[in-house]
Length: 413
Image (tube, rainbow, N blue to C red; front, side):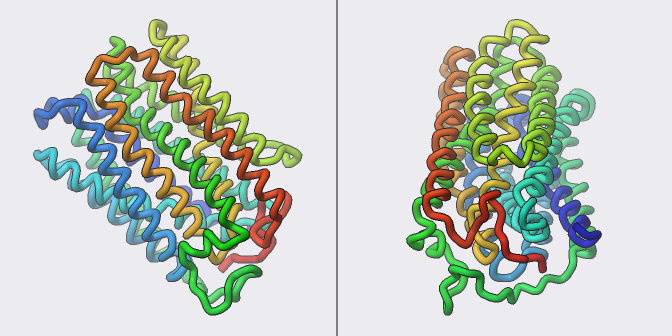
């Protein structure tokens, strides 16, 4: 990779870091926001759902736009959107407005994700595409880890609003840098092998004969993974506080979980080439689901809880971000942002429904140990779906991939 490609991947990593920070900034602050705005904690399931509705809308709308118009300006616009919404959340005194701003923040973050994944994938050498995108995705759990650690410091000292001030100012500065530093793109690519002449990139392309089954298994995998990741990230701090731990400890555990995700994502990205990406992903999901279930049994001891939370993050969080890279290898360049965006959007449908359901269990004093058991099951199911997806990719080789999961065409702008 040359200096231009490295610069683009670095800028994508910055957006990914800010993405991770924003996504996990609400959980540690939920109890303080509820007290300040005089709302019940159970209602925060709807706050998460508003974000997820925005996320699925943004990913499904801006993913195709990234294929049609190029990646740069949609990325600039979506980054600016979630920055402004974070600042607006910091000054609101109404829970209804908080819901509205979280909805639009979700649109910004959901729109940015398939674009920066596809942009980094476009720049990577064909035989190392999945590895480059996976290692870039380390920035997402790193941002989540920063959110947990920053929250544990800022909230006791300055209150919950300080977290969102910081979460808005930094992305605004990053937006200006991205607008200047990202190169101009040539979006008039020649038709790829298998692209239907006379058509533009649309969702229908994901369901042509050679793509239909792969799209189905990818969407189901995304549904399981992102539902479980969102529910665990959003409700885990509250569950730990219900188990008797302080706000600071709950925030620290969020940081520990994401530290595990950072190291796990690096480990997956640096896995030996002889290991297939689907095999690594299946193992991480299955083992991670078991570890999430064990978190509930470790809450009586902080050292034990810390170790289990770290290992669960190492597997589940890492697998979630590795799935982004894996998704980018399923489709060809002309439909990559569309494919990644719609897979992410479908995954967010479950993420919209799951937090309120979990919120009713939390409000009903459902045992914390059993809550974590439920949180682990979707990861195991996702492992099965990845196996079925890879089997279909092996059964029906196409223009979208090589045996290493990379696209052989040169798609760098």
